[in-house]
Length: 118
Image (tube, rainbow, N blue to C red):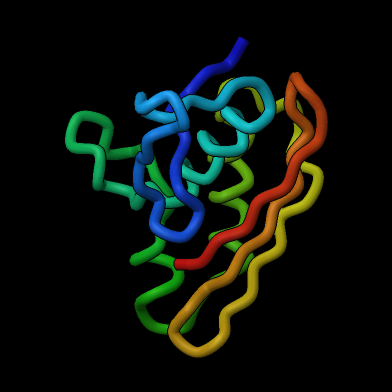
């Protein structure tokens, strides 16, 4: 079963559960947290695997944004998350200087959704 640390949705920080230990998620919630973390990794940020992450600076934040190419990179990133069987939908829109995205994912444990912004 997939297990990971839980993160607070507003701050993306680890937090303590009711038992006083770091909160842990399992199954579908763990896969969704892992997907959210994968979407926040910027290409080049992981110093030992610089090919990981989304090309935000190359496609969104310089010149004319190429949201279609960014969506393709995000789709591939999500497909490579352990526990993801299929990306059912991935919508992205830019409003001002913020890119908003929403995703629906079919996991080993069922269907879930999450959203975020860059």
